[in-house]
Image (cartoon, rainbow, N blue to C red; front, side, top):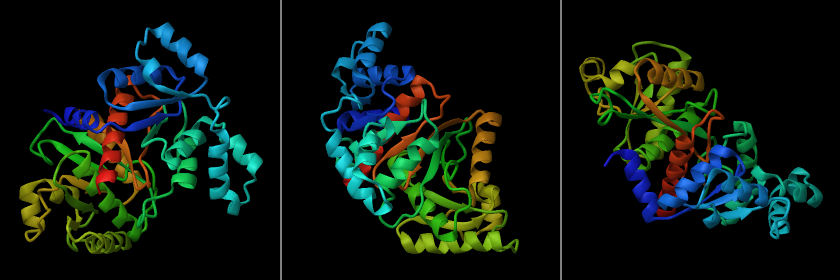
Length: 336
């Protein structure tokens, strides 16, 4: 059974409620229909109820009737969610009238449902920008205990299975935090290790990447990675983490043995932590395009509850997979 099938099977066996705030978006509603048909999740669609029903009829979607449809402008629970938002944001100057208005916004409503425990995870972004989701999620869901930043991991499926674990490598941050501090980089390492274990189903061997291996170069950027490595080990002594390592020393056994002979990670890394966002974003896209790797993600990490963001160029299959991954994140959180 390949990884995606494992993820789907785990979702089927432990059904989660996933809210899709863009319920009247064509790819989203088509993905929702297939998710329901396959028993992957209990789907909640936010959007104009009649429009969603009309779209289901137009596209011949026979399972949308089994979804929970929440119309943000005709929602009997509007005041419940408005009061929740007001209590969370009144210290920031929000009035109850503003909260009522936000509770009718599709994205804020989805996040509020997640906060209230009426959903287990959220997936959006087919039509909205990353900021449209991150803003309410950071305001309302907030980060998990002990975590100060959100990051984005990609699961890379490489055509050459000699790297990583059977050709699987998890890498971060590729999506959210531009210039992490040493403390944030340590948090990203720990979160990415958990993603590797819970989503990619691999035993994480985490490499903290740099342009230096074990002191081969001196620079303040290298010092940050060294400090982050120490902090990550202190945060989670159960994890296998090492750094600073150059990319080849991290994944190529012969180079790792030469440059870092005493490392448990060098040459065997399957979880890569980049020193800053621009490096991670460039690297995963180069591997995807030049090596023909499949990149699944970003899987957002660090939220108190699972929230994930799609690319606006996403396919129906991308939405389907990310919902299944979000289910697995929710399952892992409940079991932790």
